[in-house]
Length: 116
Image (cartoon, rainbow, N blue to C red; front, side, top):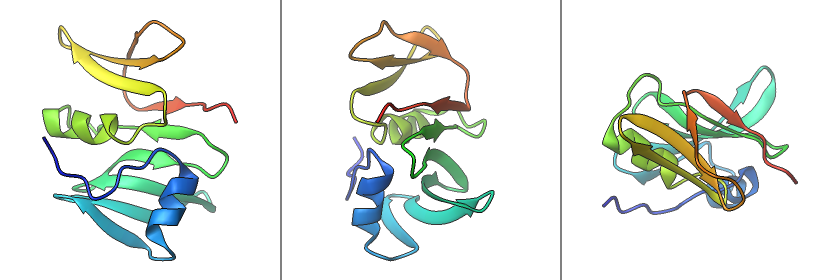
C-alpha cells in the first residue's frame, strides 16, 4: 500500500493542495504538477514521466497509463479519480465504475466527463 501525502479528486482540490506552487511530491516518484495544455491550465498526477491523471478546470479528468499498465500505475490512477469513480483490473482488462453504473471496460487514455 502506498502512503500518499495527498489524494486529489478534482482541479479545485489540486489547486488548494499546491498553494501556488508548480509541483509537489505526493508519493514515491509521484508529483502533483501544474502546467498548460493547448493554452489551458491543467493539473496532473505525474508518475515518473507520465501524467496518469489530468484535471481540467471545467471538471473533466483524463486518465492515461502511458503504456505502463502496471500495478503501481493503476494504484496512482485509482487513488486520484473523482469522488464516486473506481478503477480496477479483472481478467486482464481495465474497468471504470461509478456509484450509478455497472463497471465498463476501458482502454486508456480516456476522458471522464464529470457533471458539475
